[in-house]
Amino acid sequence: MAEDTITTTGIARHGAARLPSVDVDSFNIELKDDDGFLGDRASRGAFRRILDGLRKLKDEGDDPLGKKDSHDIGKTELDEALVGDDIHAAALVHGAIEEFAQELAYVTGRFLKTKAWADTERIVVGGGFRQSRVGELAIARTDILLKAADFEVDLVPIRFHPDEAGLIGCLHLAPSWIFEAHDSILAVDIGGTNIRCGVVETRWKKAKDLSRAGVFKSELWRHADDEPTREGTVKRLVKMLKGLITAAETGGLKLAPFIGISCPGVINEDGSIEKGAQNLPGNWESSKFNLPASLVEGIPQIGDHDTAVLMHNDGVAQGLSEVPYMQDVECWGVLTIGTGLGNARFTNRAREKNGKKAREDKKDDKKEKKSKD
Image: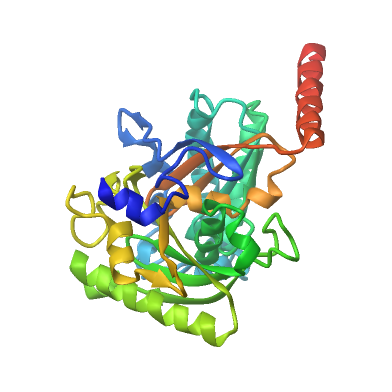
């Protein structure tokens, strides 16, 4: 497509398997069993269904969590119930955490048994569910269950706030030479409920591995409340980005002519979306729609240079925010607990022989341990 040349300007392909720091071995895998998609068993909604089932075991009028529907109880309320004086409420939440951890461990185990996820050493867990004490406990319990089942993998919460991880991860879509002359980029994180745009500072001079990167300014639009058309969504998105360009200029930043996009679904190299965008407003999977091309049309230049746009899957983008902290392993993955269960698996593209040797030594140690066992 002509749009592909226009939107990437020779930098890379949308949804690329080879990125500056990692190879993307797989993303958006949809595993199934007799009951449907496995990801549905370890989603945010799955936890709420588990909690609701436990609440129904109590006698009517004796529910320590009150009359509010399980799906309407906020994360803060659940965290407070977990540590509050009402032991019955705490027991309910603990019970839901345990059941959910069992489900997450089963689903994670199924991923680890696939060819694409073989030899995965660490998995980071992102998504909104992670941003709570309940979520952190569920992740920690799942880690224990996986180790008890003889999976040699560490399960850890994602480092950045879920609202910022997808934006920061977009930095790792850009080639490193962009950071020589610019100190920030525009990033977009698109979800089924919200769209978040931000100016992400590279802080590359302080840390060339981008470990010091952070969000300078962001803007959130809860599009689900407005129910816009697809075209209306793009128009609002362009307006948000233009406002952020102005904010970056006012803040004295040297904004790169680059926009990184995190978006649900299977992203084709021409910028179209093959599948998985059903929760977005309008038909984003149409062959006639290309979001990167639409953004270039709305923002043809940033500063004195033509705008380049790169789009990748949202699970991939969240995972990429962890790249600086995954250099002690070779193969790692990300699971994002939200409406569904996003997933991506990476292999680091080691540049230093010392790093490669350390990983080889680690593998040798594992083999030696297995032979002794």
